[in-house]
Image (cartoon, rainbow, N blue to C red; front, side):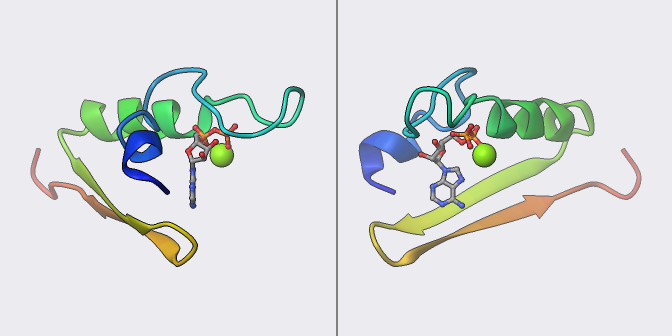
Length: 61
Ligand SMILES: Nc1ncnc2c1ncn2[C@@H]1O[C@H](COP(=O)(O)OP(=O)(O)O)[C@@H](O)[C@H]1O
Ligand SMILES: [Mg+2]
């Protein structure tokens, strides 16, 4: 992902996929769920290399 894309991925309806392909809802829903659990999500991504998501959840929220 480019820096520009990385900054927007949790926005509802943001997608880089073609019309009819992506909804742009996947990661915004993921973000809401993690937020509800007072967790944290980190994105590590380099263009044309790959993307890693690190999700941290509290055992005793
Ligand atoms: N694993 C991934 N690697 C690279 N880019 C990703 C990845 N997951 C999501 N993205 C980027 O974030 C955007 C939003 O993702 P998402 O909310 O799941 O919606 P959608 O998959 O419908 O596009 C994607 O369009 C893509 O640009
Ligand atoms: Mg998706």
